[in-house]
Image 1: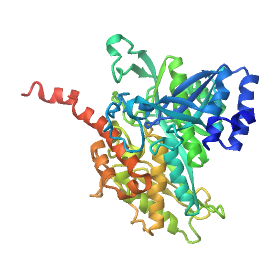
Image 2: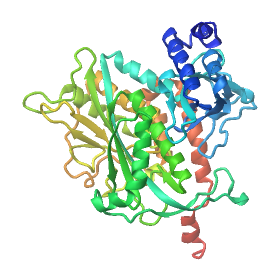
Image 3: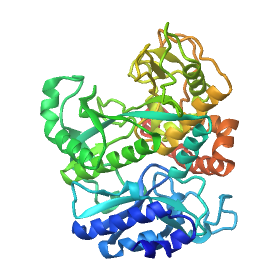
Image 4: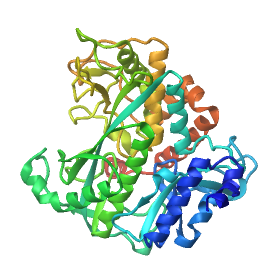
Length: 483
């Protein structure tokens, strides 16, 4: 079997290493011995959503020898699943490579991502890198973007450690919205009601009410090999939070995609609806945040570069990282808060930030610094991202912005004591504002490449313009009777 992979197309193109070939042979044997019937061969798209094909077990070996072709338009769709680029024209707006005619790109499996699905044990997942047919990386493919940012940090002899806090809602589904008239692009939202009343933050009795579904999700997450740390009742009705042990950025990006996908699939099968939307338009519903905890290790010594030395105070690396995240906060927004809806979350007194500032253990600030002398877990928490973000793009933004702050010797400003007071610089108030800031950023164009920047601007402006061209319920209520 190993010889087959060595002679295969992927190996010949330099896309399958000898080590990966050995692991592939073991996985093919596992699929056969465990009676797995289907393998879902997937990649993470530009929105952090899994797409791909399901193959039968007997075809699994061919994935490692030849890869799997999928339409390139999967990388060109906005959040309504509309293709946002003119693939039928020579002027498609994509400079990175050939994607005209809805042609194919190639999925290259990553053996370390293989998982048997605990809720569907006859089936398994494997994540893939997506490349052009000639093997060249696609500059806006999710794993490639994060891998480049990690390599960039490694060139500075540093490595990031990321911890995840993920907030989401679990509702009872009362209407599946599957009538023919509701099957548009996008489809009509399902109708729901709460599983539990809210505003009983971290209360034991509320946890008891939701324990059944939370136990199911926790066990399946652990069955996927995800390092669940805690399961918590959040502030709002039917709102919960899972946290995960620290790990490297790629592991955490994979984990978040796996977790979100598992939660949505398992809840749907039980007549529930799980949503990671930033701020659902439901009465009395709280917004969902994704709090990214981040620290930095010296590659040679393993020392936490954010841990204060004797006497306290910010280390030069912590100061530079904070300054970098603040300096590039507006430009990074489209990478950490990618939707029209994301910017409805940035309101005062909602346990979410609305200004670009940092504080010492202050949950109202954009950056919450948890830095203690002698504490190896010293870290900085970015509270601006939300759980709809593509985690590969979002984590890349942290590494790029923080790393720039360190390499250019930036110094953090004074911390805020009252994050919702004063005239500090606001976070972007709309996706349109965020796109303007991203377009003006020389850092992200340089670090991510012009191909990525132009692609993301085109894709998100397509979505933003659809929103601007829609008459909202607010407008109808405000003006229809008045004028």
